[in-house]
Image (tube, rainbow, N blue to C red):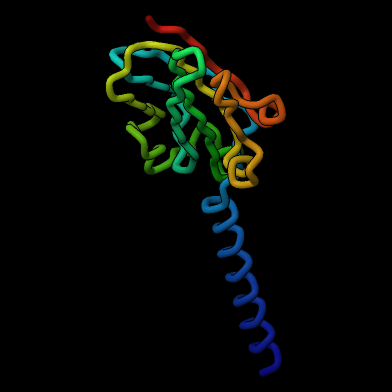
Length: 164
């Protein structure tokens, strides 16, 4: 009887460990430290489009339009991506079932940001970590339309273009 109890306990302990491992590998999100290497940015008709083959089901996206003291306009996009550890373990075989939700496409990222009545100006796209935003470390200087110097240590400027 003691052996049966030990075997049942060992089976239950194994089951709990497997459930924990599954949760860690597939449901725990680790932020990317750098933007996707094939990230493309373009602007057409007041819409900024970011595309990449990276497909993430977790990320942070924010867009801010600023009118600077000199009357010029800046549209700043900040985004981050994260994925579960399973993607690192099985990079060729892992596929997220539902890519990032903003204009998401299958097997890739396609995020779009529109600005109503956009007359041109400067577009900037920054890659950041969501946790830095939550900690209040990301700030935009309203006179320059850029991230503050202190914020730049947590961000990467991935694209900038001036549209007339």
